[in-house]
Amino acid sequence: MKLVLLGAPGAGKGTQGEMLTAKLGIPIISTGNILREAVRNATPVGLKAKDFMDKGLLVPDDVIIGIMAERTARDDCANGYILDGVPRNAAQAEMLEANGITVDKVLLIDVADDVIERRMTGRRTCSKCSAVYHIISKPPRVEGICDLCGGELVVRADDKPETVRDRLAVYHSQTEPLIEYYGDKVVKVSVPETSSVAETGELVCKALGID
Ligand code: AMP
Image 1 (spheres, helix red, strand yellow):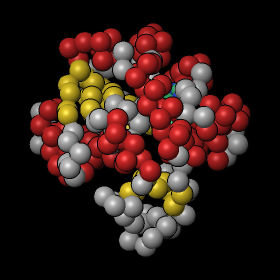
Image 2 (tube, helix red, strand yellow):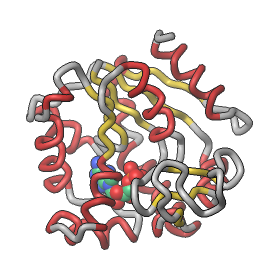
Image 3 (cartoon, protein in one colour):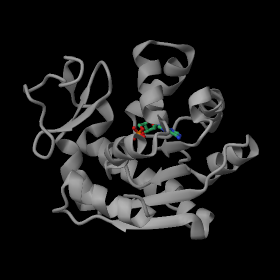
Image 4 (cartoon, helix red, strand yellow):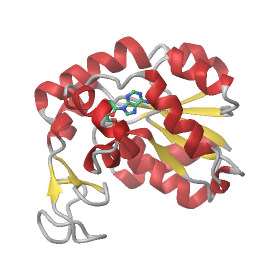
């Protein structure tokens, strides 16, 4: 299965992607996580990406395609992959296809903007391993500390309210047109504000026809 997760920043792509990667036994590829690691390690890609990311803007397409070509060539992608946060615009979708990085299905996780804004201000991310928590819906066992690796939990620079609004605007203008681009490959899941992670997971599995 070659699956793209589509949805606004904060819609739950990463969280549901983790559930799907365990169920389907294929890797999840998050360009956001790869870029954040590159920024932390101050690699050439990280240095190029940092300013765009801090402002909530998209990193240039050529950087993304380079990352994707390298990542999907690894052995663990032989049986498929789940793409989280990529492609982000039609140009990236076309470049992926041109590089043989094909797509079978697109899962659209649809969450209203006002719900996203409320959610993202409570999001905390591990500064070491990028695991994601939420102060209300998914708190860590010890406040401020990652359950998985003991790293410090931080508010991502791009999760600040004003940046969240900019990222939503970028999503609507650049990423949302991909719904039309992918046409009947798209499976939509509408997530109510009250839906827990597990309930959303059930909706996702049902939509994709997996147990
Ligand atoms: P995410 O964690 O997917 O929300 O990504 C965080 C930030 O990384 C985005 O706001 C962009 O600045 C950058 N980014 C991640 N994936 C992409 C992509 N496919 N194309 C361009 N920029 C990206």
